[in-house]
Image (tube, rainbow, N blue to C red; front, top):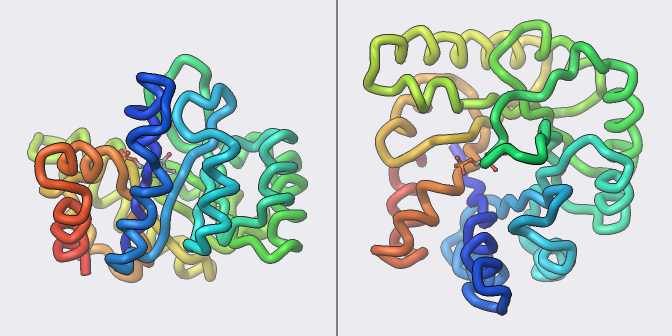
Length: 235
Ligand code: PXP
């Protein structure tokens, strides 16, 4: 499995004081030196962490940039001008602290098909961030996206509790179902240095996108150590 490091929360810390530090771009450079597979950054509608300029700079760094974004016209336009390596389409609510649930592709099939097509046509790898649900997987497949990213939030919350196995099995069978359709499978959200270990039990997950736990640990150990530790757990 490969690691995509989500650097949003370096920007959260920077924006707390409105200056330049800590710089998510410097963070991306450290990750790149360690050969992480990708850098993930979520350009939210309210620009609460990553800003437009960060996306441009990340692109010019030459990293394998995975831009997370909502399915809006504005974001589609930005993605088509920046041309990141990959786009992960996520649901977005203004007041949420983080991406709370998976994208509902099934109930907006036509809109999603139209949203995804120009991205794919321009050579961007597109991933739909969805709950482990067969209807959402089928709908994601219909959009022409090459990937899904399974929302691991419910599993992460259940880890070590009574419903861990139920949530884990949902991820496992969803990954298998998607792969049988020809979709590639990534996963992420809420993964940390403990719950990430079980991702090895799911065959064929290509990449894990992990942010908060790595950036949180980096405060005490340094970003390089936090990234190396996670890479060792998932490789
Ligand atoms: N993947 C997606 C699609 C996300 O929206 C997020 C959160 O921004 C993550 C992965 C990373 O989640 P976390 O910060 O909980 O590791």
